[in-house]
Length: 111
Image 1: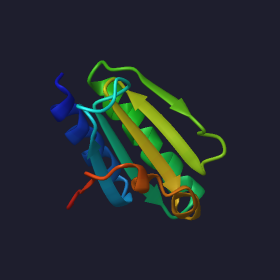
Image 2: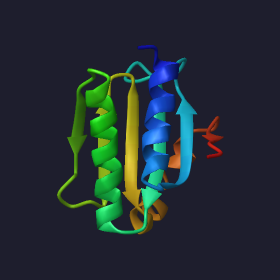
Image 3: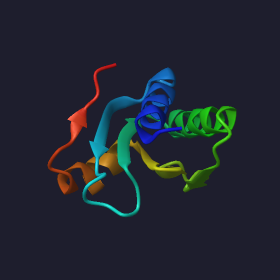
Image 4: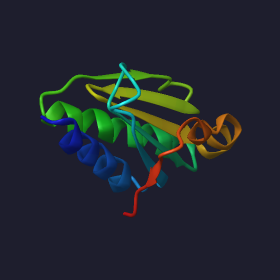
């Protein structure tokens, strides 16, 4: 599956669980780690975990392994899905870490 298709699937997975302020960052020309970053947040620990669960399920349905870190704490869950890395934050942690500042060419996703 191409990265462009995978990033769209991951955005849809986040949206299906009502993630807020979903942003996509294309770093294909500037990163050797991944092609895309997605940043979003939920408003409760349960919602943050539900978003991560949906990401894992969509990846599994497409025969892609998702590596997940930070699930138990549910404050900042990192989901590494092939060439897409999804950061799922609890809202206060997203505001504190402000990862968006690292990317100048961020694209806010309208869902």
